[in-house]
Length: 400
Image 1 (cartoon, rainbow, N blue to C red):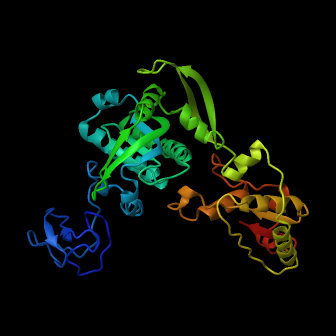
Image 2 (tube, rainbow, N blue to C red; image 1 turned 30 degrees about the vertical axis):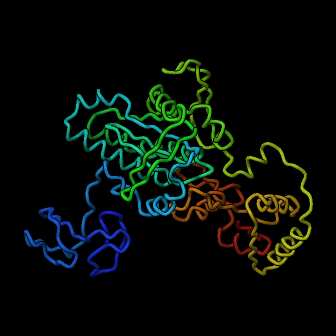
Image 3 (cartoon, rainbow, N blue to C red; image 1 turned 60 degrees about the horizontal axis):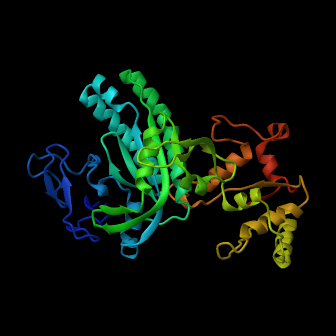
């Protein structure tokens, strides 16, 4: 039975939550009254409690009601180590453009329905990249990446989240136009900088103190963004410029700032996905040593080429050169004698099912983010049956 306070899944017949100690109760879907966990029928109205229970409505003032369990667990298990610390984060603000005008034209219930659907999209996409929603406003949100769950790539995660939200919102915008005849657009603002993490309660309520204008500048970016766009301040641009395509907007006057601010519009994800690719784009340093490791990998390739399947694991500390070793191997292997497919286990991909497998399939079929149909990489691949390609002894696959 799931605890309504901390979302912990308890064994059946338990009376109290084994994680937070709260009394386990069942909310009757008929009369909304609370019942002990061992009740089969509602003690007030007699409704059968044994059927599947519908999810309780989200209370936007209670973080535990909308924070997924995997993220809540990370926050609660690390809170003692981060409370009072100075953290570098990326702040994301999002709101509905022309919200007041839309609200005037529609019935309040219709506006509530629209915003509930909007908030659901925002929560799903932000939590996917392990961001935390710090505040709900009437028509938007404030989210943090990098605290309370620390991430070295918080700038990238925030940019991914903004683009992902914009992508999902396209269908939602069409639905709002079709059902209510209203134009629905959101705008986003991002900035990176330090904050002080205050207290984190059992209910996941968090207190942050912004240092300088980290939060204020992110809010200003959102306010001056055009509907349907994301504006990024210089600090976030520095962190994410190698991984995304930006459109420079020059220096813009920002309310509350004495000097004009360098501003960029976030356009799309770039061709670079990993730090090794970013390093490649900047230029390599000379590769020294690792001859024994290259020899071992070459032997594995020769065995795979002869028809004996091989799996090689490369283990090492961060930054020791694992990805560089794979790159050097590929540079010395005979061309056109193998198929190289690559999938990434990204930091923010833990909540995305089969992400490395999806990467591999996208590489094989040359599927881009903007494509909605399969496209083979070469005409020869169209003619060759897929199964025979993969079984051919000369097509040794290097799956990473």
